[in-house]
Structures are given as C-alpha cells and as structure tokens.
Image (cartoon, rainbow, N blue to C red):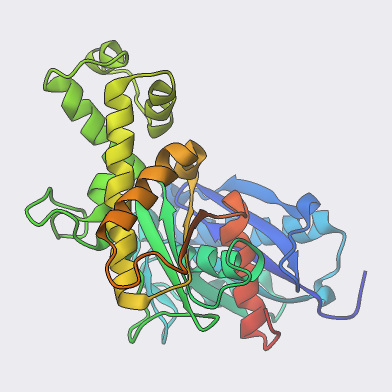
Length: 330
C-alpha cells in the first residue's frame, strides 16, 4: 500500500486477448500483476470495455497495490484513431469499438477518476522498447511488429512521432512490390502482404502448389495447418524451400529497413513480435539485404536488433504513455 502515485496500468487490447499489468516509473513490470483474458469482441462494445476494466482491476489486485498508487491507465489498441476525439476510426479486428469514445467509456466504467490514454498498439511497443528495452540508450528508433500483420512505431528525439493526423508509422503498408498482390489496406505490394507471418505462409504454400519440393509438401497437399514457426523449424532441419522462403522474408524486411534509414536516419531499427523467435535465421538476411541496398553512410551507426521486452512491450509502453499523460516522465 502507498499514498504516492508510483505506478501505471498498461493494457494491451487485442482482437482475441486482453493483457494487462502494473508497471512502475522505471518501466519495470510487476510480474505477479500480469493477467490475460478474452476480449470477446463478438459480444459487443460494452463487453469489451468491461473486460478491459476487469483486466485492469485484476492486475492491480494481483500487484498488491492500492488505487492511490496508480496515476493512470494506458490502453494500446490496434487500428487508427483520431487523436482529437480519441475514437477508433479503423480497427478491423475490433469493429465494435469503431466510432466509440473508448477512453471515456473505460474511465466511466472503472469509476476511479483516473486519466485513460489510448494509443496505437505498435506505438506502445515502440515506446516500451525505447523506455525500458532495446532502445533505452537511443533517441531515434523505428520499430516493426512482426506477426499476422506488420505494424510500426517511430520515436524521434525520445518522443513518439504520430504525424500530422495521428496515423503515422503504418510501416507494413510501404510498397515493396510495385505490381504486387492486393493488400487489405486497398494498395498493392505492401510489405505486410509479403513479410508478415501470413505472407510468409502464403508464399510457401504457393511454391509447393507450383511443384516445389519440401518435407512439408504432404502437409500442404492435405490442407493441414502451416505456420511461420513450422516453416522456420523445417528450415533449421535443412528444408531448402523453407529456408528460401525465410530468407526472402528477411530480404523484404531489409528493403523496409533501408527505406526507414533513408527517410528518418534512426540510430536503431528494432523488430518485435512472434516472428522474432526465428532468431538469426531471420535477422541475418535482414541485415544482409539492408547492407546491400544502403546508400550514403550505409548502416554505419545504425543498430538492427530484436526487441528485449518480448510480448510485454505493448503493455509496458501503454503504461509509459499513461505516465506521460499524467505529467510523470517515462
């Protein structure tokens, strides 16, 4: 128990699960406070808000702290939101929340009079890695989140860069194939289509169906599930097609790295998300392609690394945003 505001609650709001935890002012997550519960999007906005509040309450209870120790709640959500109205304007996996004032709804249901800060989930991950992870000693970083899709966050001079309309850092929607496949965003040839876990699996399955040999071919032909992890494991075991597809994924990401270096000149490029479990098998081709394409100073002075906070980056960053919203340095 404490009467001093020393902690914030971070919430990582996903289309399937909500994760929450209590974080101190140095960016340390109180491990015993980490909770997870289903989002239950199919039940509508009120249910989702109730689950966010329930997760926040449970996290604080497990932490052993009282509410007077909490300065605010940060919520990281996928999608694009209007920074003026705090309303989600685009969120394919959270459609029931679009057009709703999420922070106001959470604040009202929580009933604690605390500020609620809504931020894009990839921005939260970037802020978390800058504050307490791999980017702690860098002022300018670019972060890619690699999973079902590809998101991004940008920190310039130590602060999140949201752009003029709050929708900056959609890094998965930069074009890497001019006449490429259509993307869900309406464009063609986006990085997300080719280098996300979904894109990696699609390219592998297409290659097998076009006659390429692989130990995973029977799985593909019998319509069994294929994942990016399964492809990586096959590559490690010596499957040539799997290794080729994984290398291609890294090269597409290497192109994106050079794009960011040419535009923003950051000190550090960070990759986070489930695909980073592939380790050097993914990181090495990223670096090799980036080195091959870089101009000017090349990669001198630029670190290309995996994040250090793992799956906690989003909720730690969300808590950090809550500290900042409350006027406490994070």
